[in-house]
Length: 205
Image 1 (cartoon, helix red, strand yellow):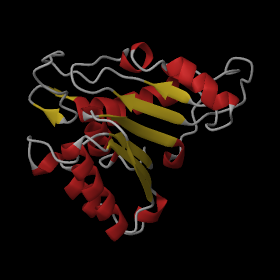
Image 2 (image 1 turned 90 degrees about the vertical axis):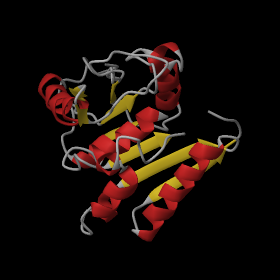
Image 3 (image 1 turned 180 degrees about the horizontal axis):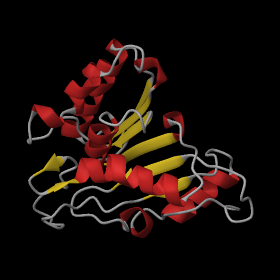
């Protein structure tokens, strides 16, 4: 948990929440150890590009643990109920322990690679909690089947909810598989009139 500057000095203030999901063979420390999370947040706050927020980086590993040979299973399956743990239990725990804004338009969930897939897979199941979804060089179908496919889940979002969502997507220009998947998901969002932004950046996975 990374609390915003002044959190303890402003006991009457409530904050938006950002949940970040790591990718394959990662841990809850990835965004700090590999991406300098607290330093990046400091710069974003300083430049007023992000409102002060409560940032959560959970461990997405299931009962199998972490391994370079497989990605986290960000869904409820035989190896653990990860979707429920993150999409419901974690949310309720944060709302109980911290001064969060509780409406879904103030809650974001996103991630990197399989964490991006997991964020959409979980977020679209818990639209009562999350209205902001994002994926960095992720994918939108999984070999676990159609039940865990954001590409299909997004089409089941009720029409009255679609305008309330905000989706951000990006991928590397040399990351052919993930770039193509992200472009296709962006196209689907446009067809459904769901507000979204897509960027392709130099580099790969």
